[in-house]
Length: 274
Figure 1: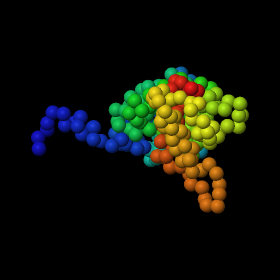
Figure 2: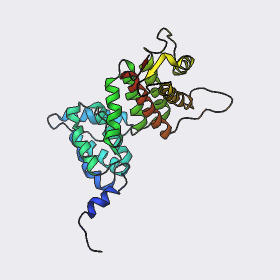
Figure 3: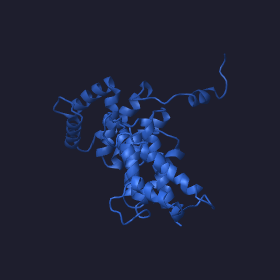
Figure 4: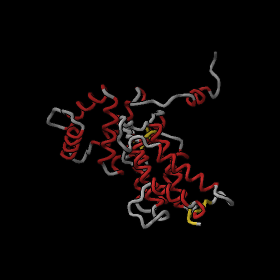
C-alpha cells in the first residue's frame, strides 16, 4: 500500500512508550549525560564528578584523566541501558537544575516516546503520564498546608518514580490524608490516625458537611467510603498469623489519587465541620 498523509502521526499515536533507553534514543541521552557531567572549564571538577558518580553507582572507571573515564562509562552504559538511566538520575539529583539542563532532557525523552520524563522538580525521572493527571496532583500538593504536601509529593514520587516503592507510596498517601484532616477531625487527639478519624466521623456524620451534597449525609458517606478504602487497602501495615503482602504498584498509584482527592477536599474546605 502506498504512503498516505497522516500515516506517520497515526503510527506514533499507537506506539507503546519505550522502557529503558531504546536504540533511537541512546545517542541523544548519552550526549545529555556528557553535557551534564563534563565541565569544559575545569578538568579537575569533571574528574571529581566522575569519580563520585562511580563511587555512588559502585562502578570502576579506570584511567587517570576524565576522557578515559568517560569512555569507560560510555562502554558500560551502552552495554547496560538501565545503568545509563541510573547515571541520568544521579546527575539530576546531584547537579544544579540549570547545569543539569533538565528541560532539554525532558524534550528528548518526549520526542523519543520514552516511558519516562523528568520530574517537575528536575531531580529525577518518573513515569510519563497525561499532563492533566500529573497537574491535578501537583496543584493539590502546592495548595496543601503543613506536612500534607510533603507526604503527597513523596507518595507520588514513590508510586511513579523510575525506582518505584509501592509500600512507601501507600504509606505516604495515608500520612498525607492524616496531615490534611488533622486540624478538622479530633484535633486534640495527638495520636489520631486515619483509622481513628474514620471512627470519629462515623460516630457523628451530621457534624460534617461535604459541599457536593445539599441534603442528608450522602456526601459525607462518600468521603468516608474513600477514607475506608484507602485505610483498609493497606496490606503491609500490620503483621499477623499470615504473612503480610506488600502493596502492588497499581494499588499504590490508586492510593495516591485517592489521597490527592481527600487532601483536596480538606484543603478547599469541600469537606469541613458543618
